[in-house]
Amino acid sequence: MTIERVAVVGAGTMGNGIAHVCALAGLEVVLVDSDQGALDRGVATIGSNLERQRSKGRISAAERSGALDRIESATALQRVSQAGLVVEAVPEIADLKYEIFDQLDRFAPHDAILASNTSSISITAIASRTQRPGQVIGMHFMNPVPVMKLVEVIRGLRTGDATTETVMALSRTLGKVPVEVRDFPGFVSNRILAPMINEAIFTLMEGVAEAEAIDTVMKLGMNHPMGPLALADLIGLDTCLNILEVLHRELGDDRYRPCPLLRQYVAAGWLGRKTGRGFHDYDGGR
Ligand code: NAD
Image 1 (spheres, rainbow, N blue to C red):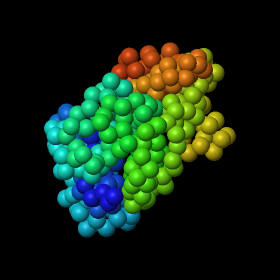
Image 2 (cartoon, rainbow, N blue to C red; image 1 turned 90 degrees about the vertical axis):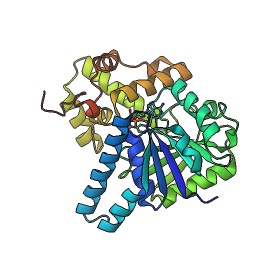
Image 3 (cartoon, rainbow, N blue to C red; image 1 turned 60 degrees about the horizontal axis):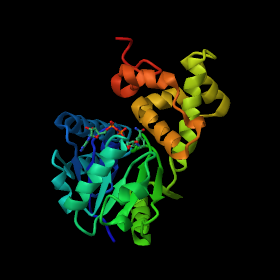
Image 4 (cartoon, rainbow, N blue to C red; image 1 turned 180 degrees about the vertical axis):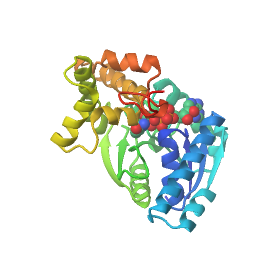
């Protein structure tokens, strides 16, 4: 099956990046967000990120404007009705995703593939909310989407071979490297990454070192391109907490218990880069 039109639901950190790479690859895109302000910010971010790619000579001016022309935005979920593939990127809250998939199943064409960008929630459970579990799959892009090569493709228990093949092929068309994994909590990426981030937060909470020092040890000592606390700020601390809660609940093992300091930061509204403050400060301490 060849996909020509994609709908992306959620225009936040991940959704605008997914829309960006799809449009740049020549696909028609409708970007849907229930919040008009978030939709406007998402479209503006795509514009500035495409412009940055152009100014660095990575894409031409024609590619930039062509990509922008291929993106429509909408607040109504019904606008997925023409899409061959829908990629959902709403917050990491299981009940919200179940509700969205119930609606996508009603509004999307009957042969469309429904993908979730979830970081940790069961694809099998999401798929069972629909009448088309064979056409539901995980398509886990990495942040920032235009830069990162990996797409973790997650097969739910009932995901069909044709669906998997179409999504693997489409990911390659987007210039990505797809890796197929099975549907277990956190898949591969967050099963390994989230406990590392959590341990870094415990290390901070217990006063072993300051945030800057923890990140420097992991960058210079382990050759990580960014430290775990800076990465948590990039991901969003609310998203990190949601992922750890899924791992803790679904795997039933206390080694995944979210650090109390992470809960405190989320309660304070310090969510990382998107709010200007997390474990590091992004707006000069204002
Ligand atoms: P975000 O909070 O930046 O964006 C979520 C967007 O969804 C917001 O714009 C919000 O307005 C919109 N939204 C909320 N309810 C909606 C609804 N009912 N209908 C339509 N839109 C709605 O979140 P994010 O960081 O982009 O994460 C989205 C998904 O991607 C999550 O499942 C997350 O786990 C996953 N993910 C995140 C990262 C990351 O680094 N942030 C990486 C990989 C995967």
